[in-house]
Image (cartoon, rainbow, N blue to C red):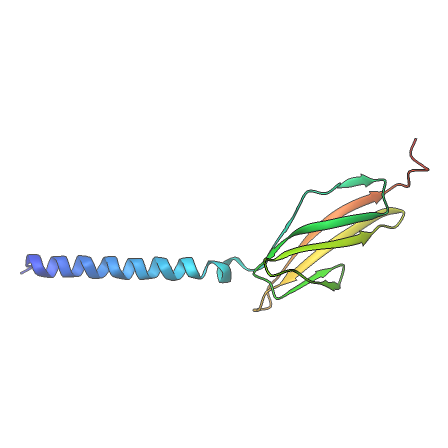
Length: 119
């Protein structure tokens, strides 16, 4: 039969296994989430200046590109990169890769209209 001691030992063992499992899942969250890019709000859409500065955070990455050109982050994952716009429509693509080869991309669209043309 079941004694109080075996019931308590079984319950304590199950709680210990559940806590260890929860801790492992918590520590593996970066592995599960993959690379992440966050951009600060910029002037999206119509722009009257030829240079736009893209600022943001990149987490869980080993490499980061802006339009297939490598850019770099500081120790905290922050980046700041200037983008020169052509007349008309420009797409900025930020791509990040983690150490397992998983990639994510973030696209921003800009329309540069020089101030001399704007009425």
